[in-house]
Length: 78
Length: 383
Image (cartoon, rainbow over all chains, first blue to last red; front, side, top):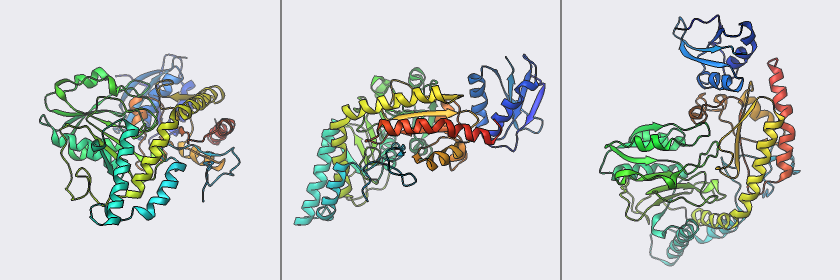
């Protein structure tokens, strides 16, 4: 299991806010490190991988946060 | 009352505002308007009765059937008028399921219209097959999913949200499994493909009146009504026929087919303008759907970091009516299942679809306004 270097709590945010938070905080981790977005919003499941593709970052996958909320993992490439 | 420019009520009718949501509902075709007004007086009677006025209504209904068949290249006895496109989808698909000797499983693409998905959920068992990034169904996956209990395959002619044309006529289904095709997005605009046992269309999407669907059932197809019967003119439908609307729908269909070479070429070029200008002038945007094998009048794109609901309202304020597949614009607050299946961005989504008389000036006006609208919405969240 991948342990993220930073976890963003976007549980109560609606689309597109989780993606905006992701973009804001990408540079809070060093290249090669992993950032996580925790979000209940169903659009995040599609939009996080799509964002990674558009911004040329690596989508690592989905797991769950400590409380069972969906968590999406992103590795900063650049 | 008449508004031939297609301009929306929220914008001035100056050629620089427009209803760009024809895929939700097209403006009434002039040919339909004339016929509808005449038929309202002449076609009111019960086409099942035997007296003169009733025979007149029956004649109009039969004319509508023949004109529709002629425009679509099918037999008149293969045409049924229903109360909506959705009703035609339900009857067409579930009637093939009921007529099947194999089983009640329907293999369908993941990007079918919700009318198809709801019909499957109500009266069959579904197996969903994915699509590529452009929205084109995985044909091999679809053929590979045809297990012994599969009674029907359902595949749209073209996608209603992103415009991508599906390979309906190219599929060779094994074991005589019948194909249902939802042709609502393309009927009239594109020739019907071959290879289907039942098909559905919706008049208000080609410029006919709302409340008229077209169900096509191929001669010899194993189709049984999935709903209670009725002793009306056509055993495949139920309820009192809306004769004036059916005749107007047929008139619009004939007109749309007659003019589609010209209209499609113009629409295709205008959509190319939108695809090119949006991609060039709006940062962080993804134009989706097949750029070539597509409906001529429709284009969809998604803007990163933009709230879809805000985008719809801001464009409306500038006089442009558009649809959106973003979650915040839907009643379920779930993102479009089409965009999801394609794996493309679902937020900040715009579906633009041209009315018949769309002009370059309207399209350019939209493209002029869009970058500023997107920039302002992004600025609200500090981007």
